[in-house]
Image (cartoon, rainbow, N blue to C red):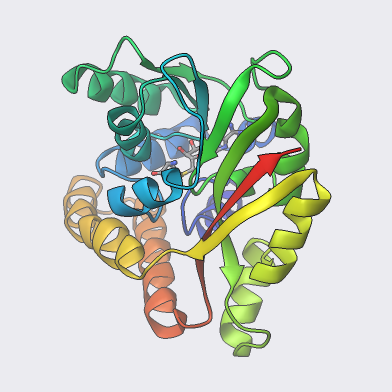
Length: 276
Ligand code: SAH
């Protein structure tokens, strides 16, 4: 049972964490600790890069030192620190896992951003904000945990009129694709869809689509998969003989192989919208 859930969880987790708070209870705590330990040993928990975070930020107008930004599913804060260094407002990072939030806050302190960039433990399906409190909602590689459409709809009320949302989401680049990758993703994340459909969903949810651009391969290969090679070596040495750990790593490797084989058919897309 635990193994089943863990497997399906890692399958979904190309970017990485398919864990809703209400599903947590069924997974043994050890498995969580294991997975968290693995992902906290790398700088990013999903594909992305500082350049791409800055590019997405270039589409957002009117941010000042009074602005309030939320980074949802922030992980250890790879992208949040880039935001903090490029804008002057205050940023609240939210993630389900205390271990990530601890690392997030120590990363903020190391960069002397702790007065404006703060991480808190919380769930994206129960955000602790007031209506129209936020100038910008950011979320890289995390909205799929509640689903793209649901996230866009439910988070909208927290954004001020004229404020922005910027999220990355796995998307198909082509109308058709080989069965192997199609089945993998239909199983892992049935909401995966083409870029034009995602843009239409954004518009339907009450945002003006401002930009949609694909993340280049280096966001996956250089910034996400490459750092995992060393992390996997260390992890497998530490947990030698542990079936759960070995299976978990085998899944990560399978995902990376699939990406390399089929990267022309899918990837992450940054979707940026302005609330109307
Ligand atoms: N934004 C980071 C992390 C992406 S991985 C990056 O790009 O590096 C997805 C993150 O979503 C993980 O840190 C995971 O812990 C978090 N997460 C999963 N379910 C969540 C939920 N219900 N509420 C808040 N965070 C969640």
